[in-house]
Length: 456
Image (cartoon, rainbow, N blue to C red; front, side):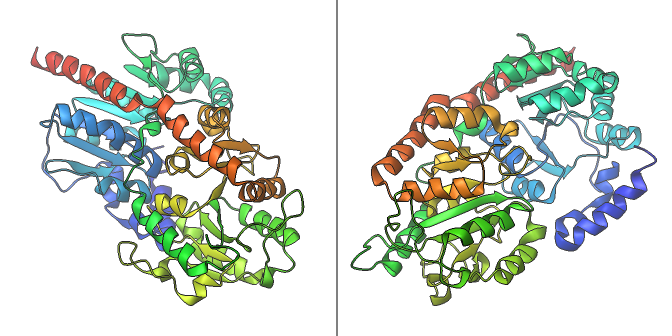
C-alpha cells in the first residue's frame, strides 16, 4: 500500500477530470493537513453518499442528546464529501480518509487524536484498524452489513481479514445474518461489545421534507400533461441509480414495447390495454455522475427524445415544465443529491444495479417516497431491505429488464394494486423504524466509556 501511493495520485487526477471534487485537498489522503493538531473527536467515516446520509440519521439524535460533541467526518468519494458538507455544524471538521498505508494512517491519528471512531457499514481497512489499535482509538462498525459474497471473499483472505475484523472494538449489525457472518470473521458482535440494531436507513425522514419539491413538480406535470381522457396526465416511470449496461438493456426492452423509439406510445400491459395517461415519461438516473454525458448521448443515439434535469433550473422555484420536457421520452437525471425529487415524481421505479450482478441499490429512499420498486434478480448488497420490501408488497422481483417494464406497466394499469404497493411502502418503514436511535444510544455509551478511560 505504501508503494502504491504514487498510483493513487494518478487515479485521483483521472477521476478529477469528470468529478472535480477528487482534486480537492489531495494531501489529506496522505495524512497531511493545514489545520493545527487537535483531539477529542467523535470520528465518523462514511465513504460515499449513502453511508453519509445513514450516518446523519443517527447523528441527529446523538447531537440532540450531546450537543457538545464535535464530529470529525471522513469520506472516500467526492459525492460522500459533498453530502457530508451539508451536515457540518460549528466545530466539526471534514477531511478525506487517509490512504490505508502505515504513514498516512499514523499521521491522521496523531493529528486528530479521535476519542472514538465509527466506521459505517463495510469500511474495514486492515491498516486503519491496526493503526487505531496501536494508538488506543476504539473503533465501532455501525449499521454493519456483510453479504454472503463478501463473506466468502473474506474467508479466502482470512489471514488478512480476520485480524482486521477482530481489531474492531464493537459491531452494530443490521441483521442477525450480518452479525453471524461478522462474528465468524472474528468481529466482536456479542453484547455488550455490539448488537443487532437494524438498518438506520429505514429512519429516513419521509414527510413532508425532502419530498415536497418533487410532489410540487409532479402536480405541475400532471396539470401540464392532462387531457380529457387522462385527467392525471402522463405517468412517470423511473430507472433509478442505473449502472453501466443497464441503460442499454432498458432502451432495448422499451423499444420492444413501443411502436418506435421516436414515437413511443403508452405501452401495453399483460391484457393488451393501453396504459392510463398514454406514453410514460421515463426518468433515467445513472448512479455515477461521470457517466451523465455518455448516457445522454447513448439514449439520443437510440432515437429517444432526451431532456436533462439540469435544464429545468432550480427545484425550489415555481415548477414550470418547458415544452421539450412535456414531449420528451426521457428525463435524464444529471444532478447529485436529488434522488428524493426523482422518487417523488415517479409512479414506479426500476432498481438499478439489480439487473446486472452488481448487488442492487438501496430501495428504502424509494419506499420513503411511496414509490414502489421493481427489482432485478441481483440484490445481494441489500438483501434484507429487498426481502422486507417484498414482504410488505412495496417491491416485486423480475427476472430481467423486459419483465420489470411489464410489471411497472401492469401497476400503472391497476390503480388499486398500485395504491396497495404504496401503502406497503409506508408499513415497511413503520415496522423497521428506530434503528437510528438505537445506534445513537450505543455510540453514546461507547463515547462515555472512552471518555472515562481517557480521564484515567
